[in-house]
Image (cartoon, rainbow, N blue to C red; front, side, top):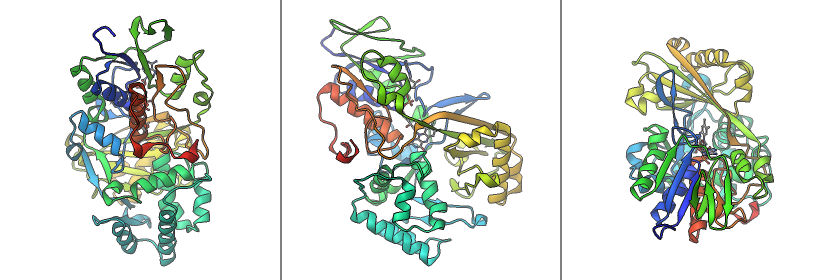
Length: 448
Ligand SMILES: Cc1cc2nc3c(=O)[nH]c(=O)nc-3n(C[C@H](O)[C@H](O)[C@H](O)COP(=O)(O)OP(=O)(O)OC[C@H]3O[C@@H](n4cnc5c(N)ncnc54)[C@H](O)[C@@H]3O)c2cc1C
């Protein structure tokens, strides 16, 4: 403690590491943030693709992301300006025989009731099944003590094939990046409860207008530096060593350490110090984003649409975003998301972008979308951990004094999301600061 402040190393400058570092700096810690890459943000960052600055993947936030929104405000970002707030919706292009479900801006639960009443593309039986799901889930307080797969839950709640195909499957894949047959029903219900089961604003969908690095990590770095901390980009920590005075990292002494890397990297750093079994056991799922550039005049009638996810028919795209409606420098740029994308990756980038362009032209009834000027496919093979029932996730605490973990994979009721990462970062910081973690995101007992 050179100047009376605790020297704390945060290893990893993704959203978890940045959140931990901000929380520590805010509470008087002297923070050094190590990030292996030149750009902060980890799996939610800006990247250079063929000379263009884009995100490594389209991200959606929810109004329920309370801790992420608090963090943005903390570092000086106004969420109302930085995020486009849309009501909860699942809208397919009209020509696809899809559905249109939009929650109006009314107090909960009226917003859901009216959305259900007005929903297009759902028969009476579908609407009744959906109403039954909502009321049963509310009655259960959106909690499930005995976990099972989402597919099993939907069967138990007698959801119709059309609801499963056009509503639940796309929601499950978007929220958990795990297909319903393998996804945890308990975690899915928890996310639904925090959004659909809470006040109306919690169910809003928030689309970043800024690139992902500017949205939080870059501002977080300034916040840390303004409080006497240091942010080291392009520095990969190779080893963490404990000595009589604390910790040695890259030749610098520290009193405490937050390891905020991906789980597999944390396992490598903790090897020989702590049990790394749970870190190594996590399985992962991929997410692919296909960018397609057209003339600047090309615009969708709304910021995003759901697409028919039917790989057997060559339809790989699940959602399409009109980037020009989020950032005016990106006019004519569409981003198509494919979650759980191992099979899509296997067909090759060229075949995938051609199939997606054809799908857009067909589903949006816009022939010009079949021939983009430029395309780029970005795949994150280990985008998130596979969020399976009864998954054992490591705690923030490692059992070693002054060494904690942070990351979207640590034990919580949330899937791998920005909110899980930020909550984990704040929790890790609070453990080191001996402060209680905020009550609303303590882990539900049954998931231990
Ligand atoms: C394509 C894609 C789409 C997604 N969509 C959504 C979405 O719509 N909504 C949502 O909420 N979430 C989404 N996610 C998930 C979300 O991005 C992640 O949950 C979150 O970013 C994880 O943050 P993290 O800080 O836990 O980990 P990471 O972002 O992986 O950060 C770890 C950091 O540690 C660094 N590092 C590793 N080893 C070292 C070392 N030895 N020394 C120094 N640094 C090191 C890495 O470079 C990295 O920057 C998406 C993810 C992807 C990939």
